[in-house]
Image (cartoon, helix red, strand yellow):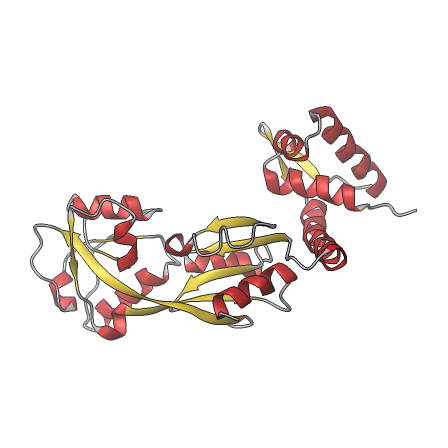
Length: 278
């Protein structure tokens, strides 16, 4: 008789990925005590602790982190087997990373796939991908894709935004001595802007690091500095307090890519086909 069952792995994964025992119980439609008892019995059969308490919550032990990698893979495989045996529709789970500006690219296209979406900068998403915490990610140029498979998905135009009172900006020198507003390190747009400035020997005196386009646009409108953003993002937030400046073609032209590692799952293959138009 096996020590580990699919049901054990599903409960364990829900607790580990879903934010604790209470949320796992709600998601699985079980009482709280049932989840607690199942986890304790599972740990007893394995002879190892999978969680430890930290404050009011639970965190994975080293054994728990190791098991979670296997649990994700086995449950994904179970979903694919069921889909193959029970019908032709694509179903299952897909843990997907996305830039904030591309976060809506996948939702709603495959009703039977549960998408676990994590947003972040290109650097953050690539780190999650290399650590196998997500299966694929939408990332933006420039990035180092060593060891990854991928394909360009769409082209976008980047623009420089400033407050309404700023003079025109057409060269890096026009931003000399000016602060920049951007996502933290790892943001590909930030890298592209700093490389453009560096090509003329211009170094910004400081960066204001923010975590959303709404915050970036608001700070730029308040006169805190300049920022580089996809032109399409300006339609998602109140951009009436900023003005746009055209960037050189080689800076403004940018591609978003879908990247992944290894053989894609059935769910990921469906996404690849969708963005490929096949």
